[in-house]
Length: 214
Image 1 (spheres, one colour):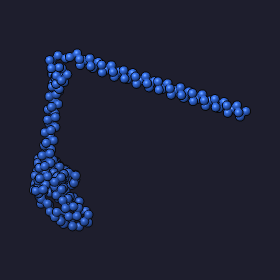
Image 2 (tube, rainbow, N blue to C red; image 1 turned 30 degrees about the vertical axis):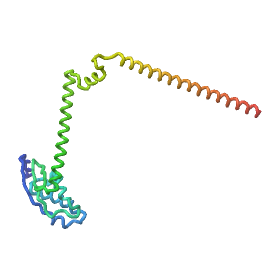
Image 3 (cartoon, rainbow, N blue to C red; image 1 turned 90 degrees about the vertical axis):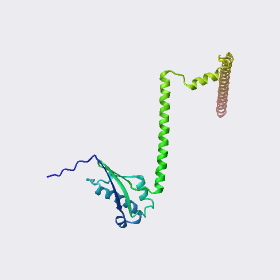
Image 4 (cartoon, helix red, strand yellow; image 1 turned 180 degrees about the horizontal axis):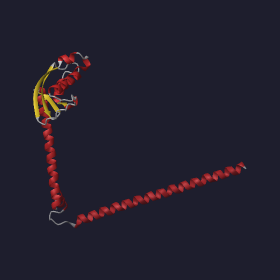
């Protein structure tokens, strides 16, 4: 008769363990000791947190716990480590029970940077929302008002002198463009005539050589 697998519980379970690592790590070569320590932590928690299918991938190790295991390199892992395991469903998340001073400062610094980044992102979102509301309402943005003030004279009425200057500048630009186009056209015609003349000369030389050969 087939045995039924126990249904996964949805309740949250928290436990603290001191995991011994020395005996398991002693039997492996020096260049594999910390890798074996990480695996030992997972195997210990699979057994004690009742992960019934023994899947090590369901044990999620916190980055600060991983740093503590690798702190002295691949050859010298700690002999034991105190961890806090939290089980939710089938997933077990593991972290250090007591953070050392160095990791405490590092965690606080990273949290501060993350919080600052979130605040900046939220500020940008609120600004974008305000701009969209202004566009939907048909209001003139402050930048457009400032631009109009800058172009208008002190009396508040736009002057004709500015318009005349702009028209003159446009005419000058168009005249320069036309002159450049004419110069390019003349240069192209000269090159064409030069190539034609050279072709005629070469043709005449070939005819003279043929006549002398006869």
